[in-house]
Length: 205
Image (cartoon, rainbow, N blue to C red):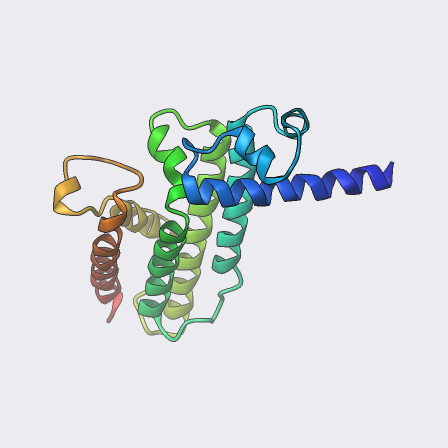
């Protein structure tokens, strides 16, 4: 039984790897279960044994992708020279994550108004990790006496993250899209860096 479970785990991991490659290249909407099975030289029936439908397979891959991103956000205590560097790290890391996985996230663009609860759970986990990174950085700088101490750091960071998420380019100002067009990402990143710099300056003595 142990051997059987190990074999199943290996097959499942290979399915996740193949699905990620195809979702990343073609996007969710243009990738079929037939293509994923073909990529693995696996029967479609066996693929459906592990994942009953494409959306459940996508969610499993999404968790895997999110885990890699979360690793880049954890264990960063005392890793930054100052608060500005911490905010730059969070914004740039998120930017690279979205840019490198842009096609993969077409599932979000297609289902923005009706994302499954399991996807929202992953999104909330990512959001909490981003928030924790910035809260820890602010509290560390306050402890060093470099910035004013805040009585409600978590609430302040939550408000800032909401503001950063709302940053858009002029052409998108009338929309509230979770993922803008790829060509707008760098402009949005620069605006978020500027906004975070204003926030940090406001905390200085």
